[in-house]
Image 1: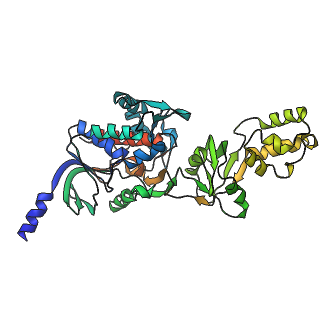
Image 2 (image 1 turned 135 degrees about the horizontal axis):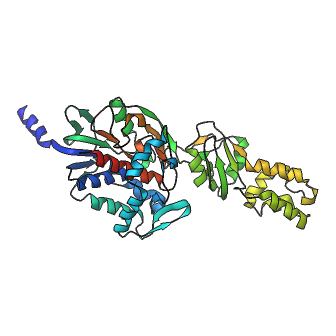
Image 3 (image 1 turned 180 degrees about the horizontal axis):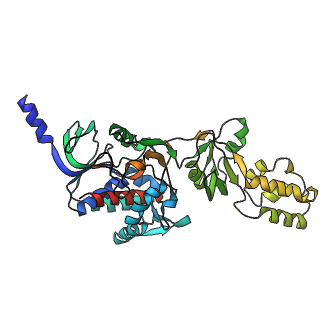
Length: 402
């Protein structure tokens, strides 16, 4: 008996902070704690670190955006993000990227991507370089977390003690890289409210004969404005064999619940009516479908024209064209659902922000317990915002640990 007690005590290590999760938020937080001289340990369940960083942006990592505010986020209380985003801004992270000599490029809508061979790996290397001297253990199964005076984390290899525990395990999106609901389980264990998580930034699925035409257009893409009751995005849409994807669809997926309609403006805000009426004057014998095919992908045009398709422009009354364009500008569709966590880029919902200190990400109920990154009920738009939330929330957390 005494030998067993001795063996167990030898495995116990005391840390200022233990970070659970070696993704974007966890690694960045570890680097900041190292600068403060805090004795820190990072525990990661999977065999690799930073997996989501490496696969993001097609391997180029859309690490932030040129324009960032709490208005680019949603959740129960998006304004919760304001403090952290002001403490550590997009400009602050861009400056870090510059100091690391990582070239980057701006793509659409202010999105910043790594512009170098190796892509996202450059960001991961920058983060791990900042963690030099910090022990990062991978393949670690955490069997329990308890709190008395300090926190005790139990694993098959032993126990660890820490004054502070930081949960940075993300949400449930992309389970193939090891994503789980660990953060939510820990929150519930300590009596911390969790708003129902669900897939976000995810392709939509359409079912039933009514929507066979949608799936028949697989591979077709165009610019459009996609709206819900509370949001609207003007970006590309892509038809798939299951339904619809593309940036605008991914964006709107975060704002709708099961059974809610979306509305697509296939004109993308352009004056199709003026262009068609002009063509009618110049080429009255041109068919309506051929005219619309000059404005939209031909396969899509053929599906949308309906009974007007083969009619010559001269046979169409102006109000018929007006009525058609009106429908085209607010085309209602009801998704059957989405492709779930397997295809979702992030998870919406999560740790209720009412439960956390917005300046430090610390639990109001459990001193020393912090949640950072995606596991919190703060979800960013597509375009680098979720990475910025990882950096900002991690910085706020590290800055709040004395």
